[in-house]
Image 1: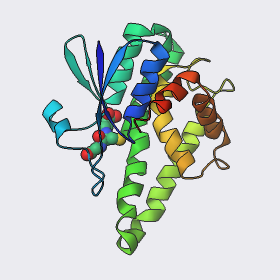
Image 2: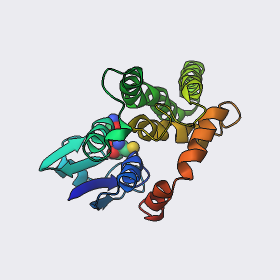
Image 3: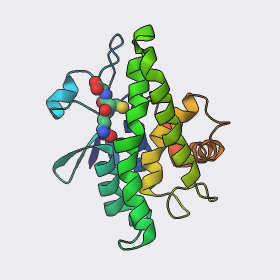
Length: 202
Ligand SMILES: N[C@@H](CCC(=O)N[C@@H](CS)C(=O)NCC(=O)O)C(=O)O
């Protein structure tokens, strides 16, 4: 049985969604963010030294890092969500699987943390805003007419990019990035996404 260590209001929602898409039985071990600090509870550190979510237990292994989890789950249970190795789509898949956490999340997190500094953070905002715009613009330019990033059906890269794309929409960037807005509307309309949300795990 697959086990998902799930923190509320976190990147782990995309793994919950993927598990619903692939239709495999799974268990969720829920964790709640601390109400004051918003951080994960100490119990997550007992699972893995980084104490972050998502983490998945599968085949007797503990797997951290969303992109690794998505890649492994797709390879095992939904191989059609990863393009054939050697194809152009595979190169795009690989780039975007790394881009989602390795690039897109950097300005998003800087924006979050520097925002907490108030006036003290003001000198950094123009650079952070420029980087946010550049990453969102890049994502917007890659959405295909089918509403997907790679291939013309749901793929592993769509799962990974859902998190930064949803943050762009939470920041009310729908008008600036209409293709990205269409992508987010499309994934929210998927029955599997809705089932994941209806679980009420945050
Ligand atoms: N690159 C990691 C990031 C994991 C991560 O930072 N998770 C956040 C949730 S969105 C977390 O657990 N935060 C709680 C904390 O840092 O205390 C991944 O994609 O899995």
